[in-house]
Length: 131
Image (tube, rainbow, N blue to C red):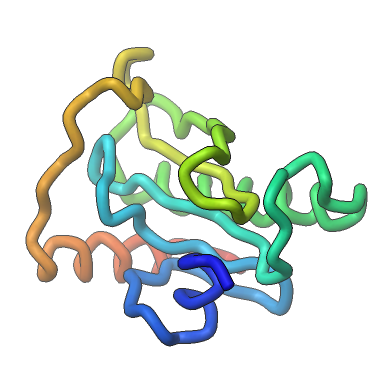
C-alpha cells in the first residue's frame, strides 16, 4: 500500500481539497508554492499511462475542476500541471499555481508552511471546488 493509498484511507492525515468516488486531491506537504496540490486516483496504479483510458480521462477532468478552484483561490497567472511519478509508485498529477515558468521547477527549495496555513489554503481551495 502506497503512502497515497494510506492518505486516501485516512491512515495518514492530509489537507484534503477535493474528493469524489474515484479521485482524491490534497495539498503537497512539501510544496513548491502555496496551493501546490496532488491529484491521485483512488485505484492504486504506479504509472499514470497504465491507467485505463476512461480513468485517465476522468482524472484530467477532475484535475481541471481542482485547478479552476486553485486559480480562484491563489494569486497566479495559471495553474501548471506536471506528472513525474518517480517519488511515489502511485499515479499522481501535480497542480501548481504559477506566475513564472521557474515556479514549477522541482529544483527550487520547498516552501515551509505551518499547519494553520495549510489548513487555511486547503479550506479556501475546497470552498471554490465544484467536485
